[in-house]
Every structure is written in C-alpha cells, then in structure tokens.
Image 1: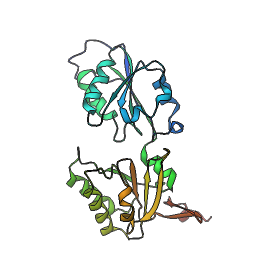
Image 2: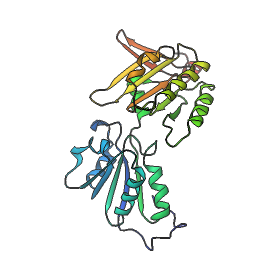
Image 3: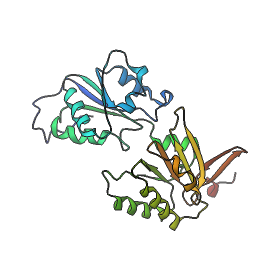
Length: 268
C-alpha cells in the first residue's frame, strides 16, 4: 500500500525499507496465516507488544526483536516507522491488525512523518471469528463488534452504541469486556441488554481462544453473571440476537447458532 504524498514534510524520496503490520491471530501457531508467517520470517526487525512477540518464538531466526508493552502503542508505531526507513520491519498485532489493532495508528502516523514509506497490512484471524468458530456459528448473519475499553472511547459513547444495537436484534461481540480495574461497564452493558432482549437470549463466553487454557461457555443473558469472574481482557463475549439459539449437537456440548434465513426460503 503506497501512502499519499500530500502531507509530505519530512521525506524527500521513496524509502528503501518497508513496514508490514501483521496480524498473528488468536495466539495458536495453527491459526497463523501463510502470509503472516512469511512476512515475519523474512523481516530484518520484528517489533510488537511482548505478549504477542512471546507467542511466535518459532518464527525467529536472526531477526532483531524489539519488545514493547501495553500502553506504548504510539511510541511503538513511531519506532517501527523510523526503523523501516532502510530495513524491512514487521510490527506484530494480535488477531487482525485492522480490528482494534495497530494498523490504523501506523497508517495515521506514517501519513504525517513518512508518507513515502511502503506499508502492507497483513490480516489475521480476529477474536470474533475465532470465538465464533468455537461456539458454532453465531455470526452467520449481520452482527456488530464493540470494544468495552474506555481508554480511547468515552464510556457514555460505548453505552449509547450498545443501547442502539440491542434495539435492532443482531448479535453483539464484546471485545476487551473487563480488566482488573474496569468491571462496572460490563455489568452496565448486560443490564442494558436485559432491557431489550429476553433473558433466555444465548450468551457465549470464549476465553483464550485456541490457546492451551481455552474456555468456552454457553449460557444465557439472565445467567451470564454466574460466569462473570472468569471474564477478562483475553475473553470475548457474544450476546445473541433475536434469532440466535442454542445449538445442542450432543448431550455434553452446547453452542450458538444464528440462522441466515435459508429456512424461510427453502424447505429442508
């Protein structure tokens, strides 16, 4: 992807390097795309949050590795852009880099400080897709994704969006539902959902999808507080829509399923 020259102030010519923002999926090596693996293996420098860097040590064989921490996203993006002036740099991002990941920030900053830098965004399996697969098929029709992190989006805006979505009857996927210090917003969101949706609405809770300690729980809106304590920043919560139902494939397994509408068009 070639960036616009319209705001160029600091660069006088094309960069010799490149930057790829790479989604590594939910954390399991099997969920990594071939393109992501190739980009990481062929990089001169790999930079990223240490949590994500530590998930892909099998891809390192001589690259310079730069680990960063949560909360240092702006510094990390600026460093990656600077290093990419004459190196092939990969910034790793959990899930998909364009879904609450680093892609937007990198593009925004590069437009200002390095508009000629070659930037590629390599997609990954996002948490909604990974969690949905473990639950069954809750997202086969329209759905919405909302992050409950209020660090960059005001709490009142998040609640407004949740309230609006609950009125249209589509499944809602909650990213970043709860941290150690931020618990009340998820409680408020559940209360809002209960105002608009039946108590028997299916709710899926997927923690550490495709990692060794993965947990998948299917409950209901009226009972979801029973599993409130296991929910954290590595969890994705699925609130079913008006057509979502429990999927019971055998005695010990429950999932979630949202019909797309074939039952209304065809007899099967």
